[in-house]
Amino acid sequence: AGRSPQVKAFVTQDIPLYHNLEMKHLPGADPELVLLSHRYEELERIPLSDMTREEINQLVQELGFYRKETPDAPVPEEFQFAPAKPLPSLLPHQPPTADGKTPSKRDKEEHPDL
Image 1 (cartoon, rainbow, N blue to C red):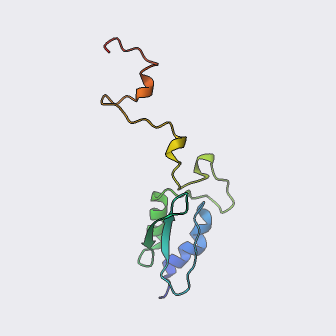
Image 2: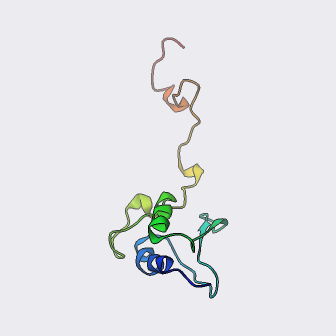
Image 3: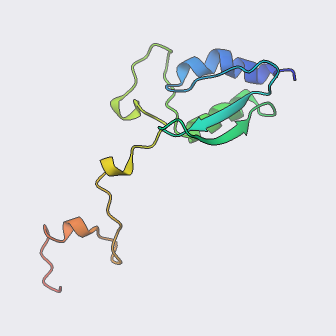
């Protein structure tokens, strides 16, 4: 399968700008974007051969990859592990209650009506 010039341009020129985005080239295989979790489990594969360079860039950014201005540009702290989502245990996540307030605020705010 011939690699499209669009995909090739993305691989050679755009991939170096993306933090944590790696291209593994399999000879003869169509280029695919393989999404891995932080545990390196495969989440999904997206074939790139029919996409334009612009579409691939858009896709990669929508997936949460951080695009640097230059390949050597520093990566902001919050994007160090992008696009891997932080583990839920690291975030103080509480399901919102029916009134839309998080339970954690209850003990800080006074609610005379409760």
